[in-house]
Amino acid sequence: MRFFAITKAGLIAIALAVFTLWTCIAMERVTVKRANLEARRTLERLERLRRPAVSAPAEGPAALPSAPSSAPSRPTAG
Image 1 (cartoon, rainbow, N blue to C red):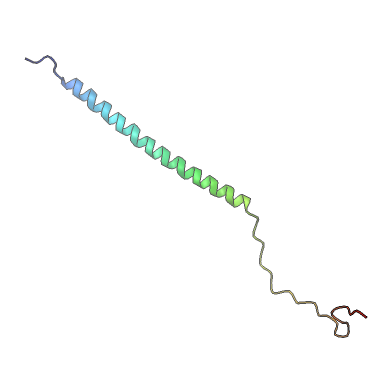
Image 2 (image 1 turned 45 degrees about the horizontal axis):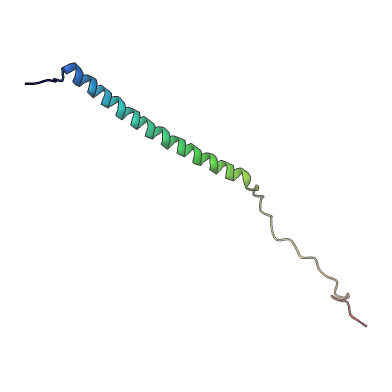
């Protein structure tokens, strides 16, 4: 004696509900991954903006000023 029976329409409704649930879960995972990627990109951009700009390298080493040879390099006590 059967008290309950699942009809064909009931099975279709259950299948549709399960499919909808799994679709929502998959879409949520994709949305979270994209949000995490966008957050990471935004933080990287902020870090780049906070860093000082890199200046162009000099053309060559600067020449040292030549000291006059007749002047003493340090004062003498006397």
